[in-house]
Amino acid sequence: MSVNQNQIQKMNIETGIQNIKLKDLTINHEVYIKILNIFDLVNHTYDTKLSQFNNIEKLRGVLDSLKSGIKMSYDPPIDNIVSKFALYVKNPAPEQKYCRFNDSCNELIFDENFKPLSIPPRILHDVYDSNEVDQLLKSNNYIITKINDGTMVTLYFDKFINRWLLSTVHKMDIGDSYFMGNKCYYELFYECINKFCPEFASRTKIQFVQNTLNLDLDINCSYTFIFHHKNFHPCDQDGIWQVQCMNLLTLCPFILPDVSCQECVYITSLDELKSYLTHTKFGFILRSKSLEYHDIIIRSSHLDFLRNVFYSAKLNCRGIDHKNRYIFLLFVAYLTPDIREKVRTLINVEKEYALIKKYIDQVVATAMLIIKSEGYSVKINKPTGKIADIIDVMIDKIGIQELKKYSTNATFISILRDYLSNVSLAYEYTLIYYIDNEDL
Image 1 (spheres, rainbow, N blue to C red):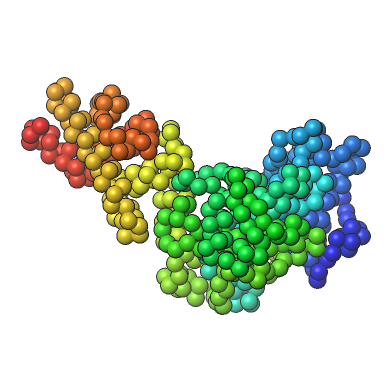
Image 2 (cartoon, helix red, strand yellow):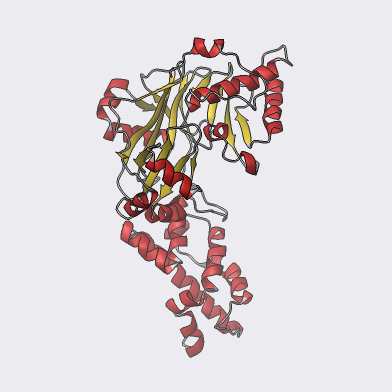
């Protein structure tokens, strides 16, 4: 059933928020109507523009009072007006964690008039009921696509500032930001479009100028893509795929004719799907055809490895930014032998590994000279704090300029402490040999 804007306005919308059931509508219609309910609830209280900053704060309070985990973020107010805001999910109550409304608040963006600017795909869940998913597969209740490794962004037009923007599930406007390397999201998106979608690039006259995107595209739609670019994703092949395009006036999805879609497959059981995981590189996405169920992501071990090493690694050291993120991630990978060797099979890291090895070797050798001169002894079966203390003092004196340009010395202290406390790695770099044989 398709629902246009007039039909939505004519619907008898309850203000209770909690008990709305529109099973014959798509999830996006349902979300939009529920959002309108919240706005209506707040409008009953306030006569002034709802987009004024004070009322936006009140609206955020209403969302918090629902205790559903739905949160709001918004741009700084201009002339006391909030030009756009987004709804996302964070730490929902256990009973609300998987509600249908929450699933659609995946950085769902609205303008100052509370019209949708960006409608991304629903949240993907990696925790699921195996029996339920198996039954839904057998009843053909999922649209199943192969995962394309990459970064998901939604392209949308902000009429308040008259610009095309890119959003992710974490940020409304990320286009001029950097993640890894010397190119921002806009530039990487632009390069992928030009390389892999030449007809789309020609039709839309897309340009990347002064850290902004310019293109001739329907501004009443939002467009979600996944792009894979070597700057963000050092392994595997580059590409770009459309995920979900939405008409913001009719709230209906559509497909771009000149951008590749994700590959769909037909699978009828969970066992069958899991058996295919060994033959597909990244895994599968299961998009539910019913509002009653959640969208599921089942990742391959290869994708889990990439996420752990390159995408989701927690960088708790000081001095890490987009300029040195790659070399630092390789530094951390290098200190774990099995990860080091697997990375080596995926990408050419010999130059970086040689720099890292040179740096570590000199740290270890210098540490051992100081340890010997100070008369310290080292227990083989457990770490010693004395080594860490020495490293803190002497690390600034090591002049490996090739690696210094990537990072500040302070960044590596905690990693080096872990290294020098790891007996297997100490053996590999002859730390124990130096101590036992007093050859220094």
